[in-house]
Length: 41
Image 1 (cartoon, one colour):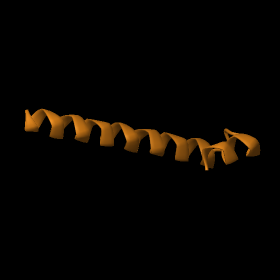
Image 2 (cartoon, helix red, strand yellow; image 1 turned 135 degrees about the vertical axis):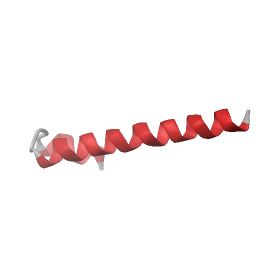
Image 3 (cartoon, helix red, strand yellow; image 1 turned 45 degrees about the horizontal axis):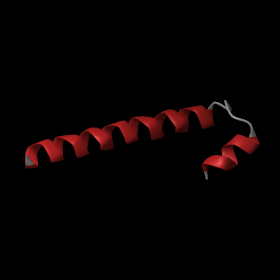
Image 4 (tube, one colour; image 1 turned 90 degrees about the horizontal axis):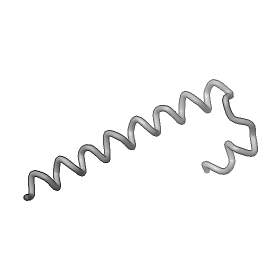
């Protein structure tokens, strides 16, 4: 049971890291306008 919790937590962390990296690339590529950028802060 404990190993399932650990695996699930690591999966969530991995997904979060990919989401953050995708958002960082989007922001650096000027894919969002200024109003949308401030919504994420």
